[in-house]
Length: 89
Image (cartoon, rainbow, N blue to C red; front, side):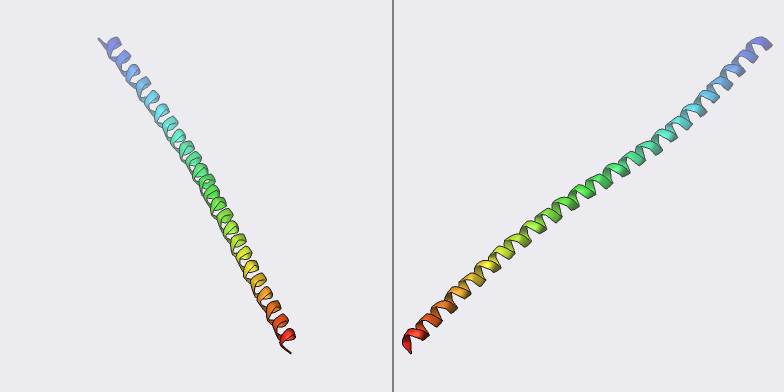
């Protein structure tokens, strides 16, 4: 009887040790997974920021082209005014 009880105790102890080992491994993997998720989130935010910055640059370029077109139109109008003023004198 005692031999059987001792065997059960060892089996339980072995199971407890295995449970502790697996629990520790699970905790390590959860930390590792959280670190990977954090890196992924950071990369995703960088990509989103890059997209926003590119869109802002494209918008800025478009605004610059529009302003340049307006300035060119103003120059043409001024040039025509001067020409009319010269011929009218």
